[in-house]
Image 1 (cartoon, rainbow, N blue to C red):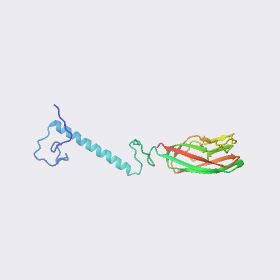
Image 2 (cartoon, helix red, strand yellow):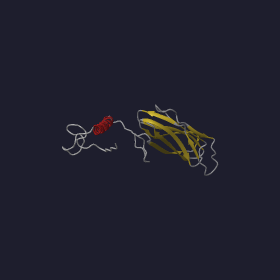
Image 3 (cartoon, one colour):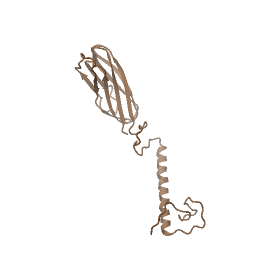
Image 4 (cartoon, rainbow, N blue to C red):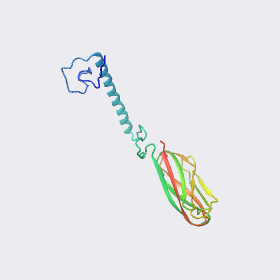
Length: 203
């Protein structure tokens, strides 16, 4: 027997009143055993769909984000969703200094979650003979000080540049967390450097 039924017809569900969702058809014949079983399965799927929707609605009512799958359409992940990208950058004016000069920069505030973090520093000219950066203080939940440094830089050339990649860190935080760095420099000449923080939300 080859029987194809895409949806039940009125009278096949065996319910009173009819639950098929079709216009009433009082002339429909009594359902066969197989038609009745197929319609029962159809009703079970409808009930399961309604149950899943109710679970989703109850979860959304708590205010927690619901992630059923990752972002797959090439668009940026929204704030609070896995894959969210945080980027902060600050340009620092470095004065001429024969001794160590210390400045504080805030690269932004990470929101609660689980983040992978990386900081980088770039200068278009090697005007520093020494440069170091470190989280100060290290916030609660951040796994490293994200320290990075460069020394014995050649400041005699022209057109040279330098960049520093700091230690990566995991930020597992429950409150908004400012990422504040101390930058120390010794500079035979004044100049500018730019520090960046890149973070990707894991949870």
